[in-house]
Amino acid sequence: MPTLSPDVGAHLLKATRSQDLDEAFEKVLSEYLEPKLCLTRSAMENAGIHQVEKRRQL
Image (cartoon, one colour):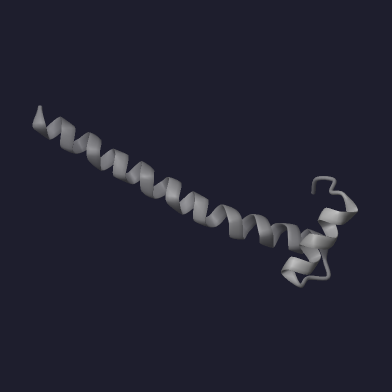
């Protein structure tokens, strides 16, 4: 786990209502990254569909 300032650690623990800093950090990252990854995957899939449609037009 990266080094965090005591203030950041305290905010993570409070925001996640956790007693374990590692668990709080993992929870915040996973809840932040999961939607981002879904959006990225969706955008990539849509781009792939558009590429197939462009090839069909040729």
